[in-house]
Each structure stands twice: as C-alpha cells, then as structure tokens.
Amino acid sequence: MTEQQAPAVRRLEALVERVAPRDPARWEARPPLRRGRQVSVSRARQLRATVKQLAAAVEHEGMPEGCGRSAKRLLSPQAVDAFLELAGEGVFRDPRKPGLVGTPLSWPSRATLRDCLKILGEEADVAVVLPRVARESGAERVSERQAAAVYRKLADWAARSPADAQSARALAVVGVILDTGMQTGAMVSRTLDDLELEPGRIRAVYHTQNAAHLPIVEATLPLRPGTVEALRQWLGFRDGLVAGLEGSDHGALWVTVAATTTGYGEDGEPLTYEAGMPLRAWGFREGHQRAIERLNAVLAGQWEQAELGPWVPLPTTPEALRRAVDVEALVPELAEVRGRFDEPVERPPRWADGPHPGVPGFAVHGRESTYRNYRCRCEACWKAASAANAAYRALRRG
Image (tube, rainbow, N blue to C red; front, top):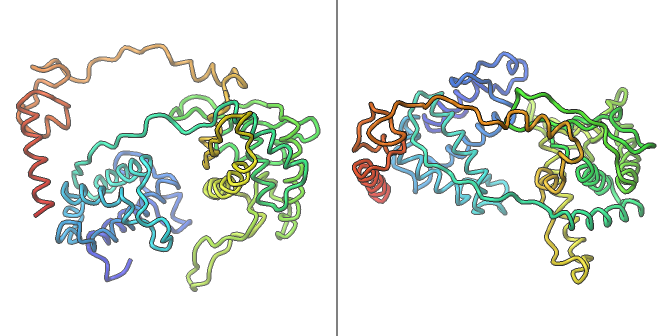
C-alpha cells in the first residue's frame, strides 16, 4: 500500500490482506470470509487483481467523481456499473502487457470480477448491487474426429523426437489428456510413481465438479503407444532438468522447463522458481497455452482439409481439450458417482405463496428491490425498476 492510493483502495487492500495474507506464515491461520469460507489460493489472486483494477479505475474519467474517497462510494451502484462496463472492455488490464490492454474480457472473467466485487462488498459491510452476467452458451471443445487426427500427428512428432523440453512436455500432456480426460488439478499432482511406462498405464484421479461431498474416483488407465512415446521423450528432458536441482528427485511428473520470477524479497531481489521444480496449476495452464499456440500454427499448415474437413484450432486451455474425451465411458465408476444423486429431491418452497407466483407475501410491490431480489415482474415493480435504471444512466451521463 502507498500513501498516494485512494482511501477506498487502501481499505479494500487491507480487507484482502486480512483474509488472504501474502505472508506464507499467516496463510494457514487466515480468518474465513463473512460468508463462512476461507479463500482459496486462486480466489486470493483474483481478489488482489480486482483491487488492482479498482485502483486504476478511481483515476479514470469514466468513473463517478469522488468514488475513491470511501469503499461505500467505490462500491455504489453507479460506480460498480461504470467499473464493470470499463473493465469488460479491457480498459484496466495490466499495463505491463500492452498487447492485452483494450481487449474485452471473456464472459468467465467478467463473472469472476463480479463475484470478487460481491465478496469485497461483504467484507467492507457495503450492500453491492450487481448486474447479472450471462455466461456464454456452449463450451469450447474439440470434435472426436479432430482429436483422433491430432493425436496421430502428435504421435508422429513424438516418434521423431521433439526439439526442446517445452515441445516434449506439450506433446506428453496432450497425449495424457486425450487418453484420460484428467482435470488440471489431477494432472499437476501426478508423480513418477503414478506412471508405468513399460505396460503403458497411468493412475488417474477425478473430482466431481461443484460436489466436494462426493468421493474422489481413482482408476488405472491404459495409454496409447503414441502417448507412451511422448512421455518417454519428455522423461528424458525431465531428468536433465531435475538433475540441476540440489537434493534428491522430488518425483513430480510435470516440471518447469525454465526458471521464472515469482516475486521479490524484502531486499528487493527477485525470487526465482528454478527449472526442474514441480509445475503448479497456474504454470501448467500458462505453459499449455503457449505450447498449444505453437502447435496450432504448425498443425494449420499441415492439415489435410480435403480428407479431414476444415481446421479448427485446438483450444488453448486443458479444460477445453479434455471435453473431447468421454471420461465416463473410460471410467464407469465415475459415471456411477456422478449419477448417484440425479434423482429429483423434493424441497419445500422457499417462500410462502404471495399475491404473485414465487414472490413472498411480505414483499412490497412497486419497488426496485422487489423486482431485483424476488424477480417479481408485475407492472408496478417493472415500472419502479425502469425508473431506477433511467436514474442511474442519468447520473452516469451527468
């Protein structure tokens, strides 16, 4: 924090530091959020990024005047509305990456920004009114036909020996994902003990998304010959990278291929994460994206369009690539776990019947809050919400 920052930004930074301290020694003892949960590592990173964007926003001419004086002003409906519109257009992207500034945010990124604003409001004891963010319909995925054709190409490249460690790792990662459909967290946690190269098998782990109460499913799955060869090539590079570290082999299957700076120490010297160290989830995604962009450039020039149809670039996220895999067909136990609670469960109505379906009897009609909070679409509530929206727009123009 610096003295030049707006009071609202200093307040929000202090709140984030309380629930997500940067000091590793304080991390385990961090207090929960007001909603009752501790923040995860990824959520902590998202909250800090949101506050950083808010710090840039208070100086922007498109924001309401004086919004940086307090957290209540900065998280007011008018300021939040303007912030989300500007941030969605990419105005507050990291200036150290000029190529991204002005690039609109994806729908998932907008939804994450919205969620972080809600959390900041709860911690600052400010009621934040947020617009609903519609997520894109349909998920990016690779067709089964293209996945099979891509696999054949990757197997050929693996057999010819990749030129560098990053290419070798990318070929091996893509092969394992297409053979197992494992999620990023499970991929990053794989060790040498999970891999049996000679029989061509790997121990796979699956978590059911948004269902922490369901058991983790483990299965030992076969690997195709192309994937085995890609892994064999990667392990050759891996051994050389790990040999440069002090101490014994840590055993992680996926490791970094180059040293990276992870921050700065108290003396101002950069903190380095050496090549050969276990790859983390963030680095796994970043490395995968860079490697797939290179593969796309090569594949596009070698694609037999007459035989295989139009070339569709491979998605640059591991999650999108694994959607080409029918995981439940590979692991029937996973299908059983996921379908265990598919039967409809009767729940009591949330509210008693009111004068309008789904709206509680105590709700007062003709108010904007009834339209937004209880989704009442009667004429009185609709007119109140329309008038409020018109007032917000006038304030922003004014």
